[in-house]
Length: 198
Image (tube, rainbow, N blue to C red; front, side, top):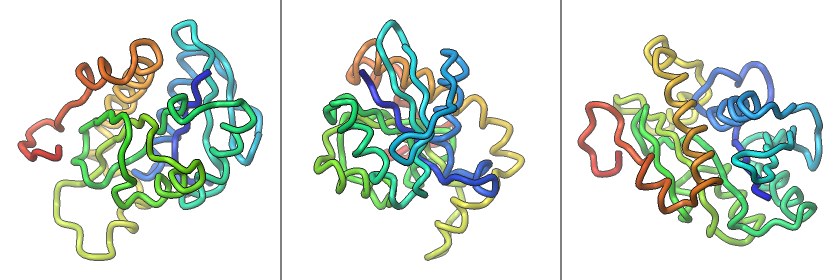
């Protein structure tokens, strides 16, 4: 079984913000594969079903972002899952808006939700799908958090569905084909960027 955990914050005030992209990707996957996100378990809203013939548990932790591991660790324990069975989907401020990066492992890179997951499960050896959310202009020191919790701009809304859909495709690919092939297929720079990190 795979556990696909999208990171975000519960509550309507956070729904349409960059920090909730993980939740939005899980919602798309649930809709595509007819999984009802109707149960709460281990402080997460979950749905169960299959993707590509493989059993999948979708989860949206309800612990608020900085305590994401509080929900994910018990879900993994209850379902007897290894770190390799976890696919974490989340926003990445270090990447420009519209970019997507699959990684087989790695540090939290300053993302508090990812850091909590790493601390709770005791390893950073799990695949993740990172969605770039940097707005393209310089964020003054200390303003990153404000931006992440602000509503999507009109320009971002124009490409939001494409980005979420691409992330859902990438997640499906990891489940069906593995991380390495999925990285080759889906890792991409945002349109118009030349940055090595993009």
